[in-house]
Length: 337
Image (cartoon, rainbow, N blue to C red):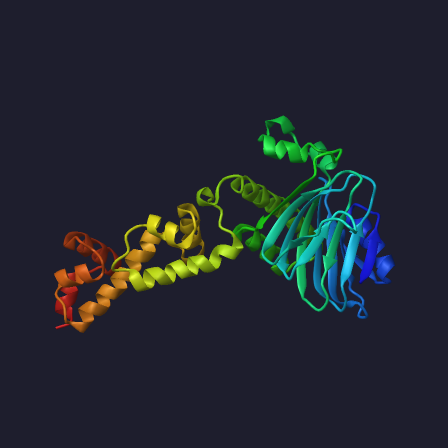
């Protein structure tokens, strides 16, 4: 295993030190730094940027030919770290012989260590990885805010007020769909230089806000959480498929929450993000599409069709049918004759 021991703390200094250790070229564009992973070690890039408010961004993307560990070993207080594993996995520990915690694909971790402890990121061999981190120097961050930390909820205050590094924290969860969106926007942003740096500065605060919202959401039981995780998107598609197949017998969203293990808030959020509809709007759309099909087949009268698509009121059916198709069901039926 190849181990790189790093004594710097700021993103700029970390990348400068890594460039020397790896004998790699470090490039800079409007304070955004990038180094290419040497070919004998693998391929990919390590990139980062610092902002005046104490927030930094550092990313690792590529593949290593052997196991590689980055040991951040400064004896000073380390930044508060938010890690997002977009692809692959890494193991985190605070000492070489300490407990290793796996952070898997689509997971995030909020990590703070004792002032005399550091961080070790261990990447496996021959597996593609993409890890994005937000690094916060809490002392600098405090100097740039205009409110008192005491105004924060206590669970935030305990984390951000700890400039001496006396309250260790390791909090892991599946990161939200909102965080996934922000990371994608960072990756796909086409501009460079001054425009990109300003964009990254804004996005670093946006992703921090999203992570804190998720952390707050994680303080309650799963059934009460309202923020959809990236790993839960598949269940939203499964729910949509379930509605597609069971539209006639569908009862309510409580049934979906119980069957698929997601809160009602997450289900509604997922449908808005994936289909731009509420669950009810999605269901009504399916029922109306089926009603048109049945009307065209001509085997059932309107009352039978109302029952077949899972509705109990002919007047309600006529109302939503006319709103959607700008014609009443009876008029549409006559037009087919």
